[in-house]
Image 1 (cartoon, rainbow, N blue to C red):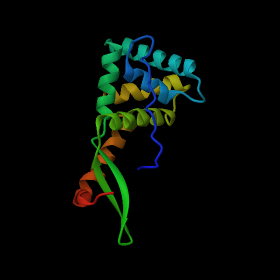
Image 2 (image 1 turned 90 degrees about the vertical axis):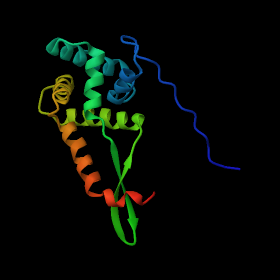
Image 3 (image 1 turned 120 degrees about the vertical axis):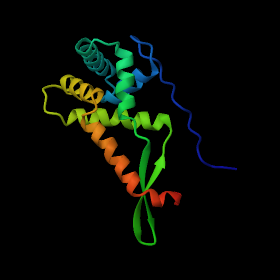
Image 4 (image 1 turned 90 degrees about the horizontal axis):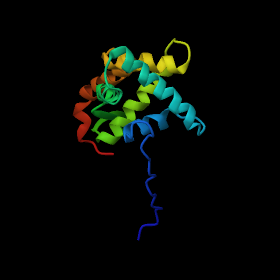
Length: 156
């Protein structure tokens, strides 16, 4: 009998404005120190500004942005015979959505605009047009996975 503790998955409710699970996950990644109201204000401001600039529906815009940044592979390191290898793994949709949301938020923090709202707007618009830092990060992961395709038979 296994002695590991079994964890229950936390239930994430849909967001109040659009009723989407995807948007509520994005808001949760933006949130700091449990301040969800501030995270919601930041997200709704940025997504409304983007929809006004690009003249498209907010929800479909966000979906397009996330699927532009979506990685296909994940790189994990494994030490075999004293040598570290980067091993590429295909990942499922939930995990790749997590990576894309985190990359967008982290790369938005590194931008040079004033305030996080404007930084997030800039990163989302650049991700929509495929020239943001998060798209470059996705391409770097793809390059490394192509280079290390020979090691994909190793299992972790």
